[in-house]
Image (tube, rainbow over all chains, first blue to last red; front, side, top):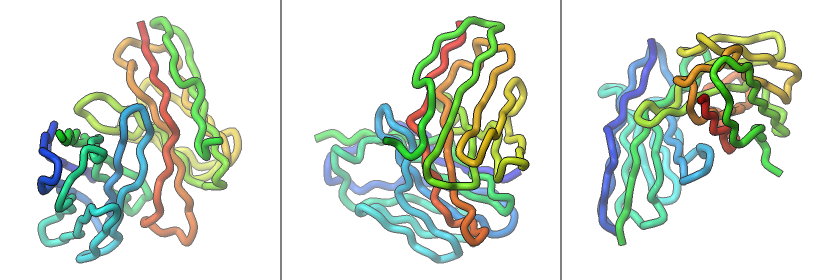
Length: 111
Length: 116
């Protein structure tokens, strides 16, 4: 079946460091890809998305590019802030409109 | 008021009891989903529904049932709760506009369920 695999956390960085969180997927057809973020005690909210190959999603300084050849959608940010500390989920929506999530990666940014 | 509301927010129940978790939405979305979140396992899909007459099992539906009472309401039931159903449960909605797959999902605040 379709699935999403993300790097295990926690990822601990100092403020202003560069962030990469890896995400790869397995899916038939052409899924849409998403990154969601979960702040402590809250539900998930959309961070960014990409709907076709080579699309780049971006929001709040975060970026991810839909790479069909490597089935990847890695999340990057050039300079993280303490306020970016959260759990990040990679997800895909498949051809049957199921929304499938990875296991999540906790990010901790230290001042 | 939140667009996607889950009740209760927290619940402790005993093994063997039946419990219902409720989700209501004011966004007018057709698609609704139930997930459970466990540490290290991310969100796993329990059931999903694309309209009142369309209910589908997700990857972990055993031990759960759902009811789509109206477009705005989607309830999750545990017929006989067991301790390994202790988890954080999320409801989500998504529009079906245009039939596309690029539509954002909106989540409730979650229900923390503990089965003792």
